[in-house]
Length: 153
Image (cartoon, rainbow, N blue to C red; front, side):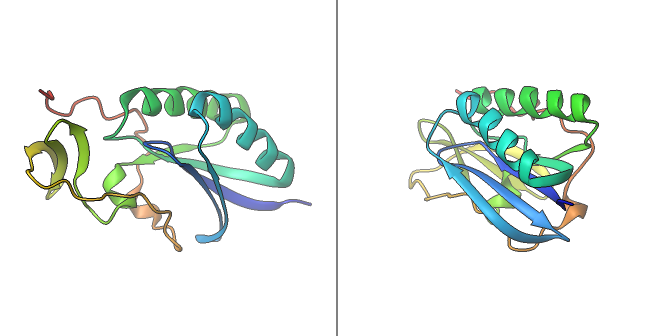
């Protein structure tokens, strides 16, 4: 009998990170420098042989729109095919609410619950990190990518 776990995917930038959570606690981390389109199926296949996957969770933006779209299409497909719920939260949950690079000197920032773009002269080092304890209340069943963010440029 496999352990029942939830998988959390951060595909916004390299390295791609996948966290395996048992009872809200991080028990395994998989990282990859490969493209999400190449590595997500491999990681999912390996983990589905090892665990009984109960939920899929991911960061739905802001970040690389292409990476977010690929993650969403793959995870939504697995959600439908395997009948596993898909949940999402914004990327700020995984980087302690630090600004996220958009383009040039523009960064995505989260003020209250609103995501906007802001020009910053000094680029902060924003890295994404899987939390040791997963707070499910921060995730939503509305898992579509965050496309409604203000225009960049």
